[in-house]
Image (cartoon, rainbow, N blue to C red; front, side, top):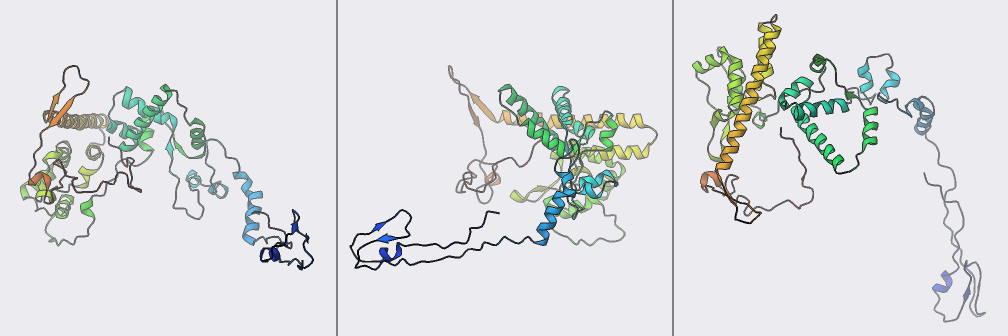
Amino acid sequence: MPPRVQNQLVTNSLLPYLSSSSTSSCTISKFPTQCSCLPSIPCKPKRTSRPFSSTVAPQTRLRNDMFTWLNGEGTALKNHIPGSTNYLSKLKAKDEEYEGSLKPFPLNPNFISEPILSEELRNEIYHRVVNLKKSVRAVSVDLGIDMRRVGAVVRLVELEKRQKQQGKSLALPYARAIHEMVPTTPLYENARHNRAMPHESINDLPVHRLTDPQIFYPVSESRQFNRVDAGRVFSAAPALEHKQVTKDAADPSETISRITQNPSLIEKVGKADSEQQVLQPADARIPHPHLVAHERQRAANPNENRENWKAYEERLQKEEAAEQERKRVAKERREQQLTRIQPESSRFEFRFKDVVVSKKTTGFDGRGSKAPGHRYGVPSYERKKGQVKIPTRVEV
């Protein structure tokens, strides 16, 4: 706290003369305590005082307890031990399990400090994706890291290498200090440990906007109601025929593969702008649906571990091949819609795209995103304050 002002009398001898209407001259010293003026004018300085407290601020009981703890038990946390956390819970949980040291707040045991990727693990992710040409999906499963984080790590390491080539400095001391004070996920030598102790959950189900409302749907007791039926109810789609339900239930793994490898063939409901795909079951919407089929096969054939992993690799290769084919077809479709013209002796290339302006592409209000001019009449918020202009997600 700043020092308190000492108690003293504040004297101002200029007040009687500043308020006087007399034109007489007056001699005032630099520090006015006395003045000499004409004898006809009374010279009695008026003293005004502003008292200030000079007593020391009393120390409260909680403040005394804080300094007592800092000078006593808290001295152990003044300097951290490299490679371990420096949380308060370590003082009270020395004999407990290691998870106790991941709780920085003793009064909030439900909060656990999440670990970060170690430097070796980051370099391994970049090596597998860039050098070994493995897919992001395969690296995510092998190392137990979410696909979005894998894509972000590859971009970050590529940016760091580019800055080194340009001669720019990196905040390496700060990174080392952070890695010493927070828990990190190491790179295990055995690949099984990465699957047994993953960095994070890689198969969390994303929340779909169609599941926000709460729907009470009456179903007879004699009818089998599963996830597929629930998705169709949320999408306001009619129920499937009995033959199709029986066929899908006979081989659920093949049904999921058909959905994930051909997402454009998913049934759509609605008209015009309200047209949307039918909500698929959770087994098909998770980031790694092929793992569900792998677990089913392991449960059916527990003694054929090698055959199960071989089938898993084949299933994963089919998923990646289907994804690459979809990207190739989409790129060819975009190229077919473009007409490239490059004049001679010119470094510019003009690209023209044929568009269809109709009620289907512009929508009922004329601002559809599938036709040009959909922003006509809509204000642009690009330069408005408070707008988020940084990427909020990573496409992998």
